[in-house]
Amino acid sequence: MLVALALVACAAPAPTLLMRDPAVPVRSLAAFDLGRLAGDWTEVAHLAAPDTGPCAPGRLTVRSDGPALRLDGALCLGGVRRPISARAVAVGPGRLAVSGFAEDWWLIWADDGARTAVLAAPSGAFAVVLDRGRIGPDRLAAARDVLAFNGYAVSALR
Image 1 (cartoon, rainbow, N blue to C red):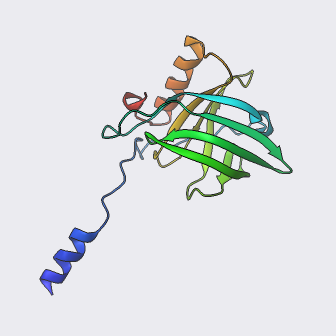
Image 2: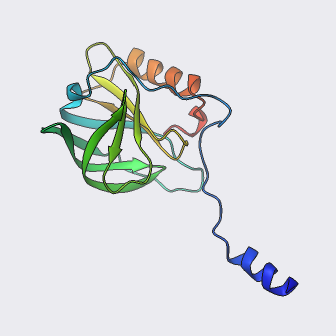
């Protein structure tokens, strides 16, 4: 019996590396109309686990799809490039249920002009900084500050 338990323990999946302090609450951007995300975005930074290789910045197109949003492109999620072709439905203020993803995506920050946005998994599995053009150093610094404030490991930001 002891051998069987040892074998089961060895077969258990390795825990997922989360790049966020779970003791720090995450806040989504409640007063933002998610429809303002519509348009073309370029990934300018992402959190990556230390054991992941390089991941070329991705792009994301967001279109209105009735009461939902349509997401198409590819992003580095957790440091791994992932194609995205999904429908996203608001499930709370600043929170999206994205088809094909087990965890909701939270909008944790966007600047006043909706030029820069930070989308993240509240668990810490991923966070991406998106911009509509060339991000200014002030907005990149603000995105870093918001990630740190919400407990994300900005040391893992690439």
